[in-house]
Length: 143
Image: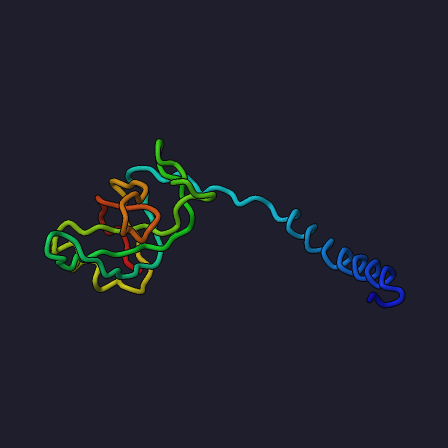
């Protein structure tokens, strides 16, 4: 039922597998742990690429103008801090409160933009596609 020298072939296969697996395990251990981003406070400037998001809200599913800013990782003020992430949020949902704010951002979709943060919190509601939500803001620089 078994071939001759089955035990030697099995031992050779195990040695080859261990030899190939060892460098991969060392490489994973050598990677440093990701650092948490810098603290962002009220009044700080957040820069990154602006993207449009399609959202529906309210009772009748009316379209809401909402935008997403992709930036480097940041820590939020306590108690939010890292929002349950290793490095902190990278994507920030920019909520518009008026048609004027939506029109102000509309021309910068796909471009770099800087926004002064007045109020920011971790995303907690279902349907929020970003890691953090900016509810009060103003445009500082347009690139």
